[in-house]
Image 1 (cartoon, helix red, strand yellow):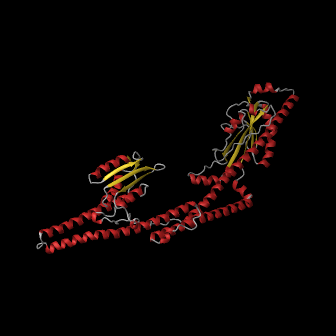
Image 2: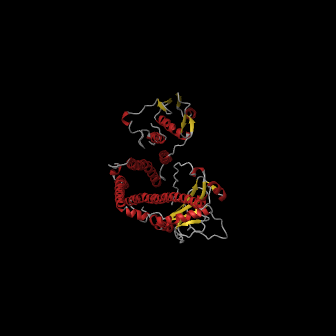
Image 3: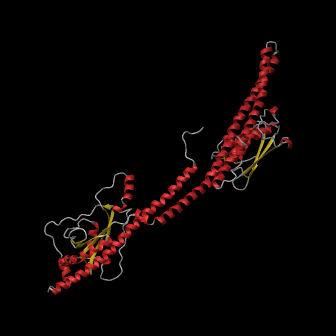
Length: 527
């Protein structure tokens, strides 16, 4: 019986798996490379923000000097108190002069993509920080000139979020509702990812994933960096720049990338070939071996010569043992069928002959002759019944499944002793294992002992000794001996052969010992 359809070959499956295994690291490397490019951009923006902060601080100092020359003395503490500057967090205060690098946190694989930043116009009259306003005027030309090289947009904000210097927008607009701005104005640096355009990504996970890769260059890294003088936050610097495109970066390093890809491809091909040799070849040999077993070829009992792996060797050995067992079973069935035919033929022939004689000459027979023929028919029928019953018992013994039932051996032997005492057989029970518990159905154990005692009766024994002895572990040995004639040496090897008997005249079928051996074998015993 074969299944419909066409299944892929194992070599094809292994090749596909090798390609998948090769692609998985590529996707991981792509994501890691993308993250590193984004973080490189973040680090550059923070470095630029630190220089812009220093430029603003110098511009503030120059503005204070200019105001002093005009006769307006500005004292910093009094000015900071009048403006209501926020106190900077201790870890970001610049008063101590210690090294305090900003940790890089940007991660394109985890962070959400925010919208394009918006800078609304002020509504109504807003407070103005004249000192920061003047400093912004001083640093704005520097921002615009630096953008020509760095390509980064930059904005300087006062403490209320008003733009006082910018590379792109006009001054005076506000940067409200942006997390990087709010964090920077509270004294803590922050970074986010924002879209460069208003065009949304298309729906659907697969299309969105492909479009995300294609539009990786349309994401912009924005950082907010606080402007801190002494321990007060006077404003913030906001910078934005698009990270370097992953595909362009790979193209710039195309020589190394192609060499690495070629090496990885060769490694994948080699591994696929190695697995194919280690698995596909032995599996094909197993298939050939199973086909030999299916045809009944004796070569199917020989294990695969080069299994390569332990699992293939175990499977091949199991298949060889199965083929050998099936061969023995097939021979046993053939021999059994031949014996059954022979054993049934004799009584059936006797019955048929008696019936024909009674039919032809029954009217002229005497009563004694008539009774003799009927007795022969009854005897042959009884023998057929015994053969049928013993054959059924042997079939049950061959397929019985051991059950975890326990009984006390001595109690069972006492019951059997009383039963056979009524049949004229004395059974003596002795030994040191009579109290042992046996893991077997008591009915099966009764059948085993009864068959042995029936053999003793058929061979004219009058006394049987059953001795139960404890062995090492949990095993016991039951010895059965009688005062009969014993077993001749020339037939000792044949007594377990089905239908072999030396007591055919005393109703023996030759199946009793075969039943005993089969039951014991199924329960891990032997005789």
